[in-house]
Structure formats: C-alpha cells, structure tokens
Image (cartoon, rainbow, N blue to C red):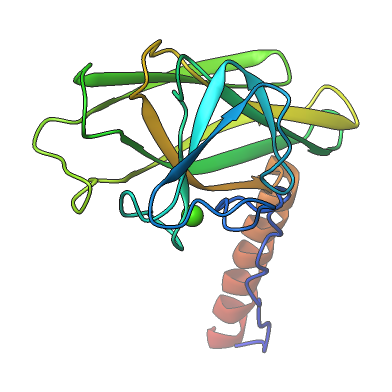
Length: 196
Ligand SMILES: [Ca+2]
C-alpha cells in the first residue's frame, strides 16, 4: 500500500471563551446576575433581558462556570466572529436547565446568519449535582464575513435553560470530502493493480 498518511486536523473553535470560564466578575460559590449590554463575560455580550452567571451553584458541564439564560426574565447572550460567506459551520453546546424552580420544560433558541432553531430541556429528576447536561449541535451557513451567534431563553422566568461548552467549527466542504473519497478509491485501485 502507498504510504498516504492522513493526519486528522483539529478544527479551530471560532468562539472565544465558549465555556464561560473567563470574566471580570467572579460568581464564586453562587451566581451573578448580568443585564442586557453586559460584557462582563469575556467575548460575550448579554443581548436581552438578564442572565445568571453561574459559579459553584450547580455543576458545570465543562470547567466550573456556566449560564442560566433566564436571570430575572428571558435573557440572551451573543458573540460575533469571522466567517466565510457560503461556508457551513457547526455549533455544539451543552444544554441543561435550572433544576431548582419551575417551569419543568426550559426552552431556548439559537440563531445565526438569519436562521434559528429551538431546543428544550426537561429538568425532571435533575438536581444541582446531577444536571443531566446534553450535547446539542446545530448547523448554519454564513451569509457574511462576520456572523453573530446568539442564544436566547424562551423561558420568561428566573429559572431557565442552562448553557455551557459552546464551540463553532467549519464543517468540511463536500468537495474536500469528495477529494478524500476519490483518494481512497485511487488507493484501492492501485492496490488491486499491484495484486493482479
Ligand atoms: Ca464552563
């Protein structure tokens, strides 16, 4: 066989501070409420209402800090990063819900580049030490050289969807996937030729 070694390339996370670990405030063992316009969490802006920046109040999915997207009402958070027009990007994030208070079903919306999707989380059986974090993903196609990714709560209370561990990576284009596929076919073809 030919010595074609394909090294997996770790795609760069386009979002900074996606785990919400860095900020100029410290939620410590509890939490801190942040209102619309706040940029206290590095790289992120509170986009509407208010959110709670959660410290050791409950178990984060990654690191030691996470968010409740409903602070005193339905809040939101956003970040803008560079993108390539026409390219598809995959957002992954971890979703749970404030387990302390109703409603039982927490709802949120993710949006970028003019499209959006809704997600929900059921806190039944969950607690601050058993949050039940779920990994979610959603794809969008960029229509500008910069894209704003936003997560908003659709739960208008003080106990909403919990968010952590956000990343955005460029999805490999179909053409490059085809390229890899044809390389594989060529490899098999030449291997067969050598056998015969
Ligand atoms: Ca975190």
